[in-house]
Amino acid sequence: MSSTVHTAPSRLRDSHGRVIHDLRVSITDRCNYRCVYCRDGEDGAKYSELSNEEYLRLIRVFVSLGISKIRLTGGEPLLRKGLLELVTALAELRTLTGEPLDIAMTTNGHLLDGLAAPLKQAGLGRVTVSMDAVDAAVFEEITRVPKSFERVLAGIRAAQSAGLNPVKVNCVLLRGFNDNQIEGFARFAQEEGVIVRFIEFMPLEEGRLWTPDLVIPMNELVARLSGVAPLKDLPPNDASETAKRFGFTHGNGELGIIAPVTRAFCGACSRIRLTSDGKIRTCLFSQVDHDLYGRMRAGLSDEELGAYIENVVRYKEQRHHIGEPGFLKPSRSMVHIGG
Image (tube, rainbow, N blue to C red):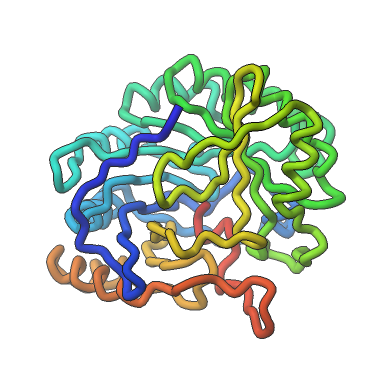
């Protein structure tokens, strides 16, 4: 099973020759989890988000420039009031070639059981569930939320039943935290019929947890997964895909490995991000935000906003510098950027 990515013409191209067609929109920076690799456990954060009408206006400008894929993120997007109305309005938009937008969502799944079918009806195409353990006790230790594992599992199954396929399950791996879940996730992919993707831990947390020693590199991970069942390479769905794909030689199921730290894929990056407060980020590890919302509030026309976006994208970073001398963590943590 492969994702549908519409190949529309695009006016968004950076100075490194990369065409930008994928927009990730954080529609809230609120979250009902306090994952150890993301949050510092405190509840004193200040939150900000735009109205549906404001997000829609900005997204329409991006689509007019060639964006063909929208992923709604957070924080936790299922906490967003008016979510179904927002998805319905997005589903009415068309790419430059007249095709529907490819609309997906990343969620922690805690509220997905009751929303999967309505989201599908509203026009959502696919869903990715962030789930960092297949053992309930380990899951609770990571999320710091009791009795949530079964709710997430029910949400995954509800998404499958609703047709939000292929359902992907993302696991951020940290050595010493949840690396004992690797083999269990391989079996989970086979038994549940989902695509499990392992993501290397990146320095995007609120605290100072990240060190290189916590990262589990791809070679080590592949060796352990192969111990569960023989693997076979699968071709990428498209040139900008971030995951190295594997299938099982015998039986169903798919695995993916996203290795931004040890095997950076910046050269094929097709993404930009819009934060919940309306700032453009051209890279997860950007040191600056570009205030698109502020310019809209100041009265710029759609044409002027489009010209501003084109100029920002032109100067998109060539790559990140994780692990290099002088590397600086981004100016925001992941929960305030959007996944």
